[in-house]
Figure 1 (tube, helix red, strand yellow):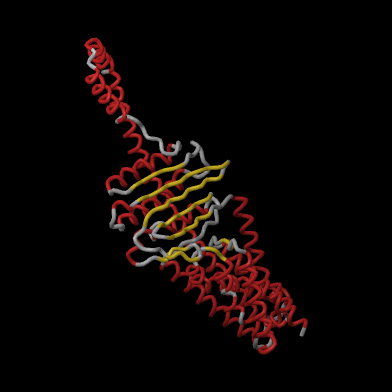
Figure 2: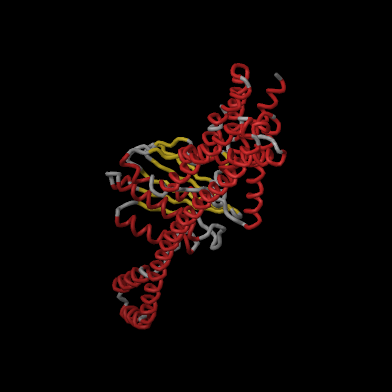
Length: 433
């Protein structure tokens, strides 16, 4: 009985590692920051399987890991749980394809049936280690080539393709494994298993590669849109600067005439006229001032357009803090973060009926290479925040739903965090990078 428990624990350990590595290396997932959740999930699954061992035996207890490994996407990974659960069948079958294929190859080299390999629990566990070896080599290759493993986002066509491939491979390998249990087929079933395994691995790699290509295309389109948006903001900002510079040059050109008028007023001792004339000059000069919000030209370019929009929509807009001219966050990523947060804040404020209660407050700051951003705004309804995810009503989805995933991806790129809070009709988004 003790040996069975050891075998079961080794089986669960390889399953946990395989599932976690599939999500992290193939789908770009990341582990939850609260490690106690991981420990709790592993403990519950392990204890549950040990109880199953007592009642249903080793084989059935091992087989139940197909379902219990759902603990990995549900409790051990951060991000969109629905997406991870949707990818779970493909993740399981993909890891199984590699381990089953290795078992067929081992059987081929030993000249035995694949069922013989599976009957030896330790050989079976050794074959299960193959997926983690493959994914470990893939991770090393990505680091060597500096390939970014970002979280994969697929559309319905890619899900259909992945499920089709996973289903076909499940039935193909399952059928061959059933054949290998019949002694009369002998080594022929092993040869067939090797051939089918090679085909299954090829299909799985093609499906994953197609998903990666589509994901890169989606990310490229998002990046291009962000760059276009940022370039438009820069163009408007610098066009406004050039226009004000031109007006300021004209004003300076007229300074001699203004001085002569003031001198004439002084000679006549007309104090009231001097006061009115000086006030007019002050009002005129303030029109040409270039407002600096944070000291960072890129951020100021974004905020210039935002402030104009808030004025038109009668929303109070304040900016606090300063930023250095050079920060480690790339400008187009900063554009994604600020534009989405501030646009969502504007749309939320528009839902507030009382104009006096509409406000947006942006706070910025930096320390060494760390960046801090906080956007606070009024909301008409409380926005539900659970596990740092937004759950809004139908009307509020327009206010804070759009763009939140883009913000999360841009922040995660630099290893930062996004925190949402909603209290007393006040919504706050805080970003630390």
